[in-house]
Image (cartoon, rainbow, N blue to C red; front, top):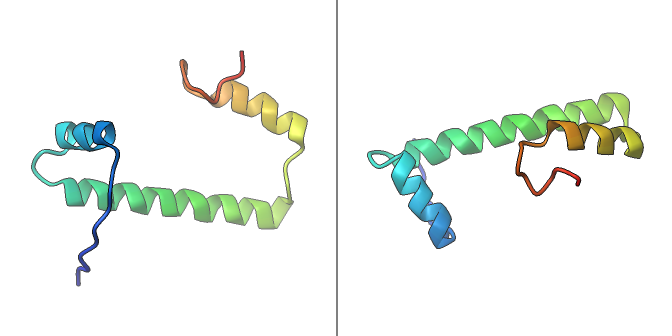
Length: 75
């Protein structure tokens, strides 16, 4: 079963979606949503099992794991 939804995207993101999934943007978005939900569920399980991370350790790993050129990477 499929439910129709309507979403608004910034122009740049919409253009990028058209470029990477010109034939079936709906399937691409569905897979992205599945992936994000799985990531959130994993994060929730880790939080439940181990509690909040140490802020210094979190900052250390966020700096090292952020993609090059990312806004998340500390200078």
